[in-house]
Length: 549
Image 1: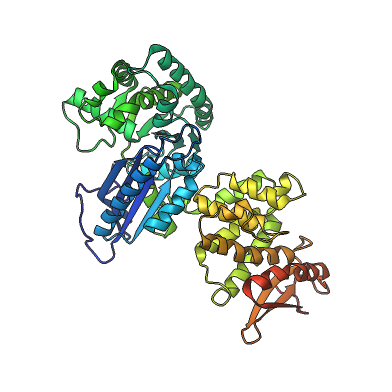
Image 2: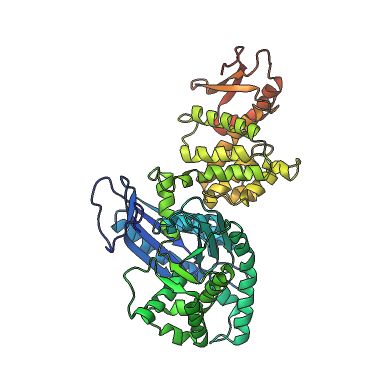
């Protein structure tokens, strides 16, 4: 069924039809391949049409066995592929390239330096996303090309380094997971024989089953009694299997594989046959690339074991996945989708509040701190800083979560907050944004940001470090202004006096007669960092009239 998000064209490259159309490119830097789609977005529908595709097998997952680093050869292949992607995007007049990196870059010790090098040499900023965030965007991508009709569907995406398992029903995903079983990873770690020996096959099968059992049990627990589960498969491995199956069963490959179905029995037969062949024999199969033939056995075994554990007898192909999900996420972030999938627009807020609840954050208090911090942000924008709505949202998230480290221990809780946020699987945020949020929380008290701090130096760019240095001072002031955690200060009014280089804070108390002495003392203690960062003198005065609500 085709709806407003599922228009797709067979055109290879074309130009916009109307001035209102917007061209966007999305790049997925995976463990096995680099994929790009270029789309034309019609904001009026809203819909996107795929107008160009690019794919290159670069095998970033072939990492140094001793250090785990991405190898120079793999990085060189990736650079060349990304340059070609940039050229194609430019030829299509793309207004922006949104790039994400997944498993191989996430895990490699030199992964972040690799992304910094891409930014420096190619001018391409790449967002590093978590496994959970990858799963969420895969879900968005699948839904953009397939209608679930409010029925529960499991989605399996078998990549080179990880496998994502998702449960959804047209609405908010019920379950998201990412496990470290991928076709490239398992081939490198477990397969030394060609064809694969019986012993290696059995060991690999047992390993896959052992790793997948828990996430599949958790996924199944989110099904309601009586619900029938359907399975959708995405990724190069699954599309290759579908192409082979169609050639054998139909004598031809359909124009689109979207919705094409394969039974578990047929997949088991294909696995048996592929495992009996050596790599050269598999490569001779029509539609099978040399690089795919090396990893297809491990990928097919992951699929068959997952289907067995899920108890499903057939698989439906979904041609859209992560890169299309990146497009949908961009459309959501820019307000271009408001009807179906509108629930995803608030995924950041809900994810932050979920983490806050998990670590027993006092939400009344943290929301007051957030309100003060955002008020200071709004009132100082344009003369002390020029950050925009995206950075404002990161400040809000940090304000809500700044004290979550108390869950671990009161001592050095700002450092605990950094760790909990950094590893809290905040959905809707890319890696660099999570790093910023965690750092903002880290510096709401005690030491100021310093390059010798590993968490601060790990920020991907000078811009990100400046963002943390500036906005963390606003969070410090906000925390000071609710020192007793009773909402003593109801409102803050900023008055900037440029000639004197002074910022006057007019503080309005919530209760008549409250001298807010502790808040004023705390503000005086913490304002030094703010003054040094912005080069202004901070002058606070308590107004006599309380605010009326």
